[in-house]
Length: 294
Image 1 (tube, one colour):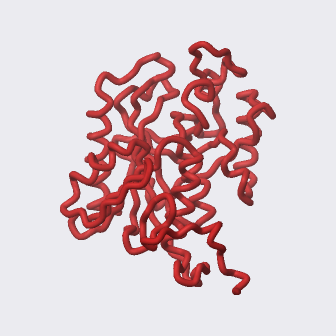
Image 2 (cartoon, rainbow, N blue to C red; image 1 turned 90 degrees about the vertical axis):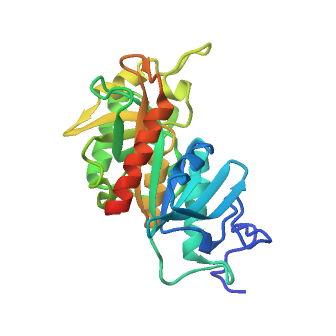
């Protein structure tokens, strides 16, 4: 047995020849993949395709692959949170960079364009509900990337140290990490988009500073995120997926971007009156940019 062969328990391929969770075969994935948290959002994107050739569903992972004009595109629901992103990013990479017949990593590795279209909460007064944010960086307080070998450059280390000191999260949460989005993609999302750092949290309530019945360990966390500055950088918004996509995507050699519709403003204490309409506008804007530029 080859030492580089990946065992059946580590890379699980079903009887259809598809990867375990996503239930996709290598030929069923396009070079550009849109990820969405909400399974119901998949059809809201693929309804704009000129044709759909693949439809798969397993658990919360729904995927449609088709064409916009002559460009092939996959849209895939990830479900919520960085734990699901761990599955999605690793399995997408395996589909294009591991030979399923030999169970060995291919010699010639390929890169995907992976773009998250999501919803998010603004952390700045000047980023209102129903606006759009393109994330320059994902800053994770979810710990996912700490399970993988990774290194931060000197500027990233300096920013993270400043972030830890300012937010006072220290050891109670773990080690934050930061990763940048792909410059080749983000350059297309300037007009009509706010840009900045997106913080990724491992939950919706306590981790994002919401208080219902339980007290939280860092009651001033949201205010500290809003006030944080590092040179030209500030935190624009937070949600539950971007840093995991950016971090794993960069380690695996993929080009990643997250664009989010702002459905809540945590500074103004406002929530969108029609978040679905805002998401639809973002989908249409993305597909126009994709068809023209990506």
